[in-house]
Length: 225
Image 1 (tube, rainbow, N blue to C red):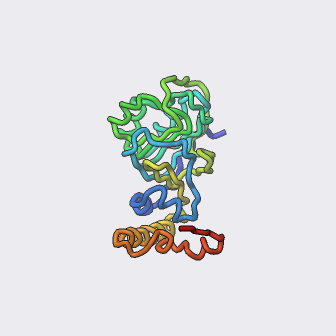
Image 2 (spheres, rainbow, N blue to C red; image 1 turned 60 degrees about the horizontal axis):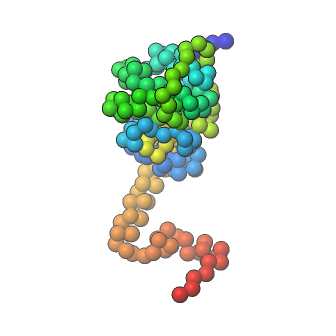
Image 3 (tube, helix red, strand yellow; image 1 turned 120 degrees about the vertical axis):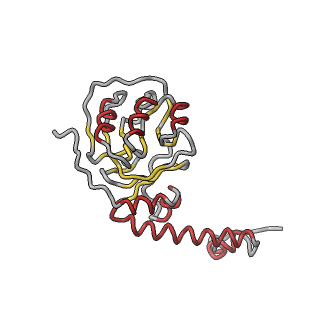
């Protein structure tokens, strides 16, 4: 078995930049409400944000040897994303590895398991998203996989898939759909900007401006003074 694949087809940087202009929630809605990773996986600091191609890691729960292997092979702009069995009672990544990844230009680290040294991670500013924060350390014993298709946070992630993360969570975009998703995101942003302007001008009620009148009537909504 090949444990580490170093050949990854990374998307055009213009697609990364285009998606980075929009929030994870906007992208999720614009692409048909798909691609959202589990709500458990959140940044250690709400200010953290990233967008980049996935470097996938299958790691044995409570063991971070493959995380260190992945950092060694990752390139600038990559997002390292780890399936570690959703083990919450585990601090598989901390300030030393964050410094190593950040120094290489890695865009972010994502794990369904835990991290530690959270205060140092916030000070460093390197985007770290995890399922938990836990002080318990990990061993370095069991081999896993790097750059194989895997499941993380309820989504099937392939190497090179685009991941966009911010305070609300993480969304996955397939590279061959990214250009269309960017277009749909801009349409959604433009529409919502118009809605906000109309709300500020008090042009109508939420029901009217959001086009809910017919739907509510069809469902039999009754209102009494």
